[in-house]
Image (tube, rainbow, N blue to C red; front, top):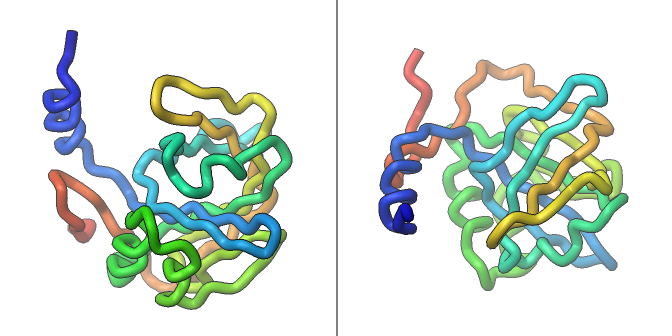
Length: 160
């Protein structure tokens, strides 16, 4: 059996983009940093987000709930760090140009933003919910692409 520590050490070698998942429920906003986001299909347009059951927004990711996935730019490390903290609540939104569309908060300055609706095909596995998001809309920044990357326990820039 693989130890949790060995799994984590191995996964640190996998570079990933950094995103913030955000939603609004009963006038309360929630956000979390996520590195487990991937495309699923272009027909129907969908993606997958893996969310720890202990995340503050986890109980609100029910079928039909709208959420945003904000792909962060390299200069948005502070937003990533804020949204990674467990007990900040609405203070996570104190940094960045947050606005709302499709009923979900999103960052206007993100590299890209996906507006999604939780699909009933979502499921759970171990400590995480595997959330299938049906993409309702996409915003793509017009500025040069400089995504925030997480690798080996640190933020990195994409070398081009």
